Image (cartoon, rainbow, N blue to C red):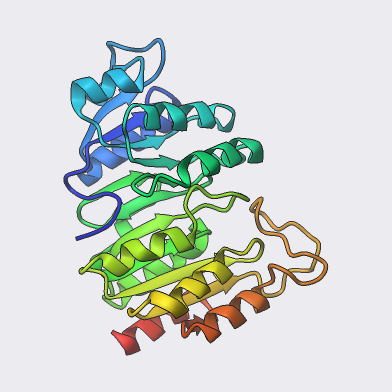
Length: 290
C-alpha cells in the first residue's frame, strides 16, 4: 500500500495550461501517473499532452471521475482553487505555490479541521510521490525507490538529500510527502503520522523538520502516545540565529528560543524518535533498525 496517492489515483491538474502545469503534467505522465483531466478557466475543450482540459473542477470530476488534485496556480488564487476542488468532492488536494497568504490558509485550516477524510497538502510543497505507483508534484522521480519507509518533510532539498542517501543504500520509500515550509500547512506531521501508522507497507517513518512553529513538538506528542513503528527525525537549522527568518516563511526562531532546533530535538528524543545529525545519517540509522 501507500498513502494519499497510488496507481488507482485519478489526478486532476489545476493550472494545467500554464508553463509549470504543462511541464510537470508531462513529467507526471512520464512517471505513469494517471492524470485524467486539467482545469483552466476559459481553456475548456482544449488538451495538454493528450489530457482533456475543462473550465471548472466540477466539470472535470463529472466527466473524468478525478479523485485527487494538484494545484499549479499562483499563490493569490490558491485559496479559490482549494475550495473549488473540495466543493467538487475531491478529498486529496496538493498545493505547490509558495507564499500563499496566511489569512487564506487560516480559512482552509478552519474549514478542514472537522473533515477527517480531507487532506490538503502544502502550500509550498514539492508534492507527494508513492514510488513506482504515482507522483503529484515536481520532484525528480529518478531518485526514488519503492520500499518500506514513509517520509514527510518541511524541506524539499533536505528531503531529496535524504531520499537519495536511502536509495543508494537500497532503502526504498512507501510514500514521500512535501508538507511544505509555509507558516500554516494544510496538513501537519501530526495529521499524517496516523496514516503511516495504519499503512501495512510502511515499516518506519522519517520526519524531516526545521526551525519555527510547533509541528515537530506536536508530532512528538503523537509519537510518544501512539506510534509503534520506529521514527527517524532530522531537524534542519541548528545554527540559525534567534529572531531571523530563514528561507521558508515558517522558519523563524523566537528570541526566547521557542521553535528552535534544540527544543524540537529534545521533544522528539523524549518521545523515543531516533535523531539524525544529517540527511545522510538518516539512511545509516534506517539501515540499522529495519
